[in-house]
Length: 283
Image (cartoon, one colour):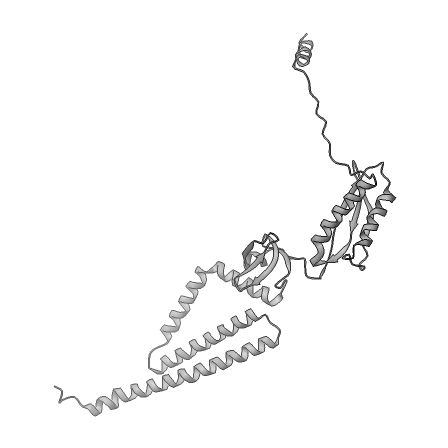
């Protein structure tokens, strides 16, 4: 049986073509992998020069590298004589199935790309988005991390952030503090405004421009409301607001200016009086 096998024919018809195809496939893979790596590096360099966020740059360059590498692998397999049509169809079907099963994740991914491209906020900004208020700690492809004022770390999906309203309190670098101080109708308005103005002038964290507002804004039911609206840097917003509230209250107390507050009158009746009233009604 062995003698009847033509070794030369086996080598010429099977082993040699297979070996050559294997060599060509390996060569295609090596060269293709090198080209994919270079094109990925060029893409990364170009995107970095365009000013795009580093997270998005790294992600896109990685995707480009993997897609090119996939094409190289398909080309190498095709050189081995394997039909790649069914393989491509299988990869497409698998990709579609994965995309459908990860619909929410894909939404978060798309939102993450939009956040990184349009940059409605950056790391360190104090924002209100996705039902959370806090400083932006990290922006990733699928989610963003916030640090709340009470030092809690909150991770919010990017889809929830981009689909809602985003309020960036740090975008311009300055903020206006809106405060209302109510005084009694019998109190001296000019005196009250003078006290507040002295406090505002003594506070060096208040910006000179824009000029602060100090006006009588409303004649309410039980008080004359004075609107105080100074401008400060975003980082000084809460410290200045708290300090002004305390200082103005203390100065009002020293100068006899009242701050009206809601009062409740409670009327009590004796049970005997109630019974007498009931008897009078029945007669």
